[in-house]
Amino acid sequence: MSPRRSYDQYCSAARALDVVGDRWTLLIVRELLAGPRRYTDLHADLPGVSTDVLASRLKDMERDGLTTRRRLPPPGAAYVYELTGHGRELLPVLQALGRWGEPELGERRPTDAVRAHWFALPLLRALEGEGLVEVRLGEGDFHLYIGAEDGPVYGDGPAPAEPDARLTLDAGTGAALARGELALPEAVRTGRVTVTGDGALAKELREA
Image (cartoon, rainbow, N blue to C red; front, top):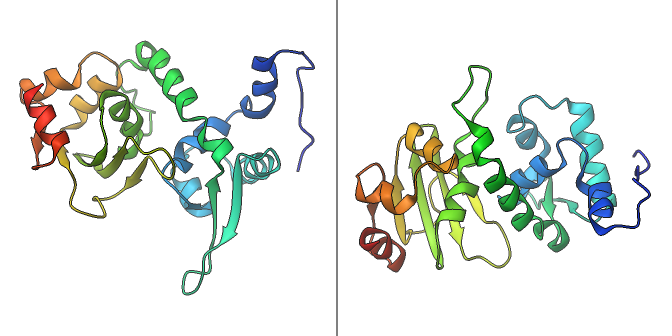
């Protein structure tokens, strides 16, 4: 574990960057907002990070109280990493960065990797209320926990229970939403996002 580098400035922003300013740290937080993840799963969903750097960042994040590491009970018996409450408090930081970065996103470049669940945080910013939402995207399915005050805010794959709303959209619509070029209510009205389900969230989206 490398010693923490510091800006040595008596400023809360500088102190925060001492903890989360290293490359990959906030992207690891993004992945762990889905709940406990195995090292191999994290590595697969962080294309471009080396195994040495990922291992180092995870150790640093555990040292700084952002994550914990625990062993799953049998038959899993694998080690997983998860956010602490302190680490989960970075959700609004990531959301603010995501909103600030919308104009920087532009069109997808040939070298850009993409995962379906990377559209989770933009959709969370667009949805209000509480409930379970399943999202069906061309790249894959994921689900959102709208209004959750603790625990995961999203997860890979179909919803683990009957969702309050189910959204179906293509990759182009997901990208337009992520870039801030298209608002979710407009996408629903124009048919670019199909909403099904009988929950309050589904009804609100159809009526917006």
